[in-house]
Length: 104
Image 1 (cartoon, rainbow, N blue to C red):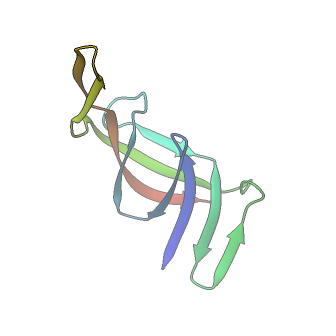
Image 2 (image 1 turned 60 degrees about the horizontal axis):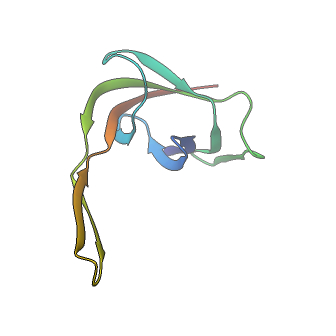
């Protein structure tokens, strides 16, 4: 089983080949290929590589499948005894990626 841990959008993501993942919005059109060069960890069968902090010669190739918005989060603020109430919502922009290959 081959997997890697990459850093994308300020988060660390555990990825596998052929899987798709939803991460924070990345500029690009659906169908474009992008490369992640911040690979922190790579395991290929019995070979384990750990970056300090990143692996230099390893890149992850991914394809942008689509852009969409995440589920709505309700933000409610209230100050007691002041009759102040505020309700608003937020939907985060997300990008769905398909992991195509690990380039060494």
